Image 1 (cartoon, rainbow, N blue to C red):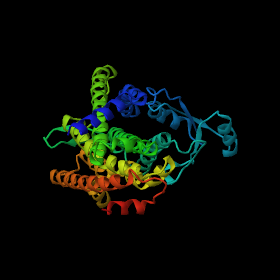
Image 2 (image 1 turned 180 degrees about the vertical axis):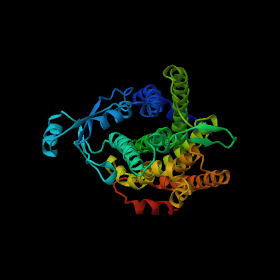
Image 3 (image 1 turned 30 degrees about the horizontal axis):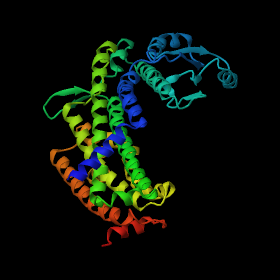
Image 4 (image 1 turned 30 degrees about the vertical axis):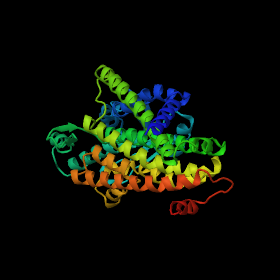
Amino acid sequence: MGKLAKIIRMEFRLTVANRVFIILTIIGPFLITAIAILPSLLSSSAGAMGSPVTKIALLGADPRFVQEISPAFKQSRIEVSAVQGSSESLDSQVQAGAFDGYLVLPADLSDFVRLEYVSKTAADFRVTGVLQAVIGKAIVAQRLVKAGISPSRVGSLTQSPVFETRQLMKSGEKKNSDFITVLMTGLTFAMLLYMTVVLYGQVIARSVLTEKTNKTVEIMLSSVRTMDLLFGKIFGKALASLLQYGIWVTISATVLKLIGPRLGIAIGAGLSMSTLAYLVLFFILSFFLYCSLYAALGAASEDEQHLGQLSWPVIIFLVIPVVMISPTITMPQAPVIVGLSFFPLTAPIVMFLRILVGAAQSWEILVSLGLIIAATAAVIWLSARIFRVGILMTGKRFTFGEVLRLARSR
């Protein structure tokens, strides 16, 4: 245990004294703060984001009709104008920048079910969404008037209700929530888990590979066991990462608490002490799971390029949950998502996201944690066998299948 403790202290000191570690520790809280504030800024008005006024031409529209609907566009920083002429002339004006786009309106709106909108930025869903809402409401109003309903009643009949989304917590409390805020919060923490696990996993793998290639490990193994060396590296890096996590969370929480009321925005929907506790728990489990794999791959690698080739199957299981953040948040009960939340290599991120949106049952969390712990124990045992054999083997570039066969060697 004394030798193991010395290795842990050595790895901890080497990690925290590294320039990259210091830089990431300093800039990490600011990145987390920026991403936490971004959802509220995105949900604010376009004017608060500094967006320029979007100019839209309504081809063939009645000027009185345009005057009636203009106030509904102004709050979205969209300026509409009634123009006459041909679509060809408007094409040249849009290309020249006089207008950002134009909408072709027929003489009688009530008889049409499809309208054509032309712009250089067809992916501007904000503008198309406002156009569909305002023009669509005006068309429905004209149809009601044409059907004989009094114009004074049209406004109340076509008024859309305002929806407020609230998340029911297990305590019975109802918290205000929206998709953008939950998505950005989940993205922040999922990327935090992904980046730190990949970063420290590769650091451990490169550390093992460096000691293997420069023959330092042969000197170290003359006085310590391979298991002490393996666990010393993992535990040393784990302590350094927890220190970094603690600094990030403490500084970020303090900054957000200070600037949140000043900006008048709600920051971090769904965040609580239990959420942060789950974040730390899943990070610790995923750290030991993946870092054990990376240490074994580093021991079996011949050089940096070979390490990259062996690592790609491991990285895939980290990438899958990241690219599925949006469906995980919107469809947390889908069979594929539930399955990924139980599969040990993807569970740390997927199950944490399901917990964040309140879709995971207590028994599901316990089963997922149990499977991750069991898989971690199995991976550590296999990695120890690969590490014991591969750390001293040089001159051969193992394939991934050969690395697995090392685990069965005696």
